[in-house]
Every structure is written in structure tokens, then in C-alpha cells.
Image (tube, rainbow, N blue to C red):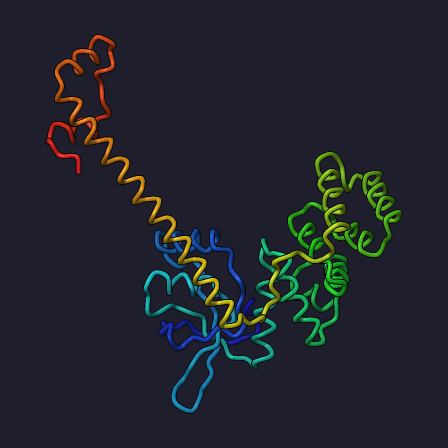
Length: 294
């Protein structure tokens, strides 16, 4: 991805790096990335380009947002990086190409990346060449993007529906959709479980629409009111967890006190032994032997 662009490797303060093409990250995948870097180190360097402002040299991130944020999560102050030379346009396209060419990407990523390249005037053949995706795939995704078919895009991305079939569905009425599914079955494109999943997706699209509820377009800004509401909801959830934890702890203390009192009754202990119920969990027994239940 650095062919034709001069680069050097430097250790750069993270505070001097700006993310100019931010992306939403899956929290589970991000956590796995953080753990991987913590255990094995940074296997692939990030890529930045140098920008000089009025006060000091700064850097714009070209590739590696996840790795950069993982370093921040780990409390690192510096990160090794390839420093390339190139125009803002070249670096932006490189970032888009890098994101498109990843083995795993979500439909919303394609909306942001392939759509971004189209907005910059790149043709479908040029996008296909730069990303390594097939021309049919790029054209199909482009049509689905233009029609707002987020539900079909997601199905394409996870491999439930071939892009060619998704385009047919997007352009057809109810009768045409059934014909498209039938043709896909005849061509062995949709069989068995995949055909059942495709039918469910089509039905969900018919009832709920082309878009996916809750999908947030890239670049959309949250209002201060929504941020406050999200903070309060998170705070309320944590308070509820604390109340439940306190209630559970109080019940356990009560049980421990009760057992402590009962085990001091010789007749009760004799009864337990006669019924072969005189064993206790190790931790509870330890508390009883210490004479402490708090």
C-alpha cells in the first residue's frame, strides 16, 4: 500500500497524531486487538503523513486507527509509524483503499469508503483496481449504496446473498424478487440454509424497509442532549448493578450469620449428621471456623 510513496519509520508522540478519517469500531474486536498488542506488540506499523501548522509539526493518520487507539488504551505515549509524503488527496485515497481492501469490513464501512472514492471522482474500474475487489462487486455495491439498501448490503458483506442477486432484489417488485430467488436457486447461488436466510432478509426488508434502524451515518454528530442522556442511562444501569450487588451481599451476610448460629446448636448439628447433611462449602466453613461472617 506504500508503493510509489517515499516513507520513513519514526517513533511519534501520539498526542501529535490527528485522525482525519475516523471510523466506528466494534468494541469486541477492539478489545481483542488491545489484548493482542499487549501480548505480542505492534506487528504492523501505522502510517501517517507529516503536516506543519503554525506552531509545530503534526501528523495526520493515514492507516491504523485501531492500532493507534489500542496504544492509547494501553497508556502508551509514542507509537512507531511509517511517515509518508503525499498530498492530502493521495493520503485520503490510500486510507480509503486500505479500509476497503481489509478481509473483513461492514456494510457501513463500504458506504464510507467506496462511497468516498466515488465522491472524489473515481470510476468503478479504478476503484476495483485500487481495492482488489471485482468490478462486478464494486458496481453492485455502488448501486445498493445509491438506493440506500443497507439491509441487502449487510447480507452481501456477511456472505448470505451474492451481490448480483442483491442487485436483482433491489431493482425488482415482489414478483421479481421471487423470480430472482428462484433463479439464484437454479444457478446454485442460494441453496439450503442460505436460501432460507435470504427469504428472511427479503421479508424483513419488505416489512421494515431498506435501511437498518440504529445505523448511524459516518460523520453524524451527536447533540449534547443525546450525550447527556446516554451518560445518564449508563449511570442508571451502573447504580442498578451496585444496588443488586449490595442486596446480594446483605443476603449472603444474613445466611452466614444464620449458619453460624445454627452450627452452635449441638442438637441441630446432630440432626444434620444423622441426615448426612453435615458438609459445607469450603469458603463458608472457613468463615465458620474463624468465627467471622462479615
